[in-house]
Length: 31
Image (cartoon, rainbow, N blue to C red):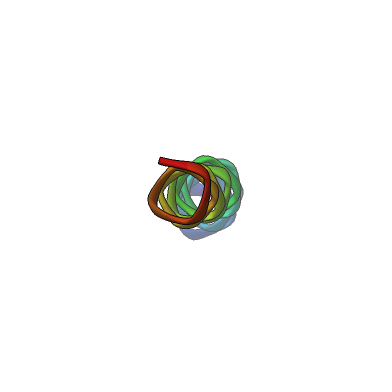
């Protein structure tokens, strides 16, 4: 069960990280 929870947390963090990178890229392109 602990492993499953870790994977779920990682998925959420991965999504946030992906959004963060996309925002950074958009920022560098726009500004």
